[in-house]
Image (cartoon, rainbow, N blue to C red):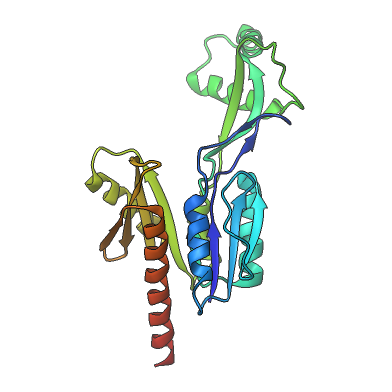
Length: 259
């Protein structure tokens, strides 16, 4: 059995010395990789993670791939899937929703917009939006953003949702998506998690609430396609529970293929 795990949090460049990132540690992904490595039926584990993330202990079954940005994750995911055909994909990585497309300043934008407005009387909202989009496309990322800029502007562009691409890349794999949300109730979280499962054609989704994750514990809800839910309350229990459930799932698939 071949496993692919993504873990940690990506970073997007502002310039050559600054980045936008998130607080994901990759600890749960590392624990899942370690748990899979202990199982006899698992032949290989590809762990796609980041330089800042927590890594599992060195193990002969685990191959670690270090990436940084959304673009690097996308390219490496495709490469791994083409060459190794994973049976199980666990997509726990916190991937940036946006990348920095341009850097400017409030003063520069105000000056440029003022000049443009002089030659465009009573422009519509659509025209102004089109101008700003063109301005964004024309601006570039600096080697190093000057610290003397009083009001810097970071222009962000959306990244494609990689979880939406997994089923097409691996039609026969068992896929686990992860969802972190800030909801008032567990019921709301389950609805959001199940919606992700359906949209992305995942087999399972591990749903978490921001307020349920701390140094002392980690409450998570494992949702399947029948909306059955398993609940765990610590990272080690989550890792063990996920691995046991997925091995059971893959073994059932093998038995059905032999019949």
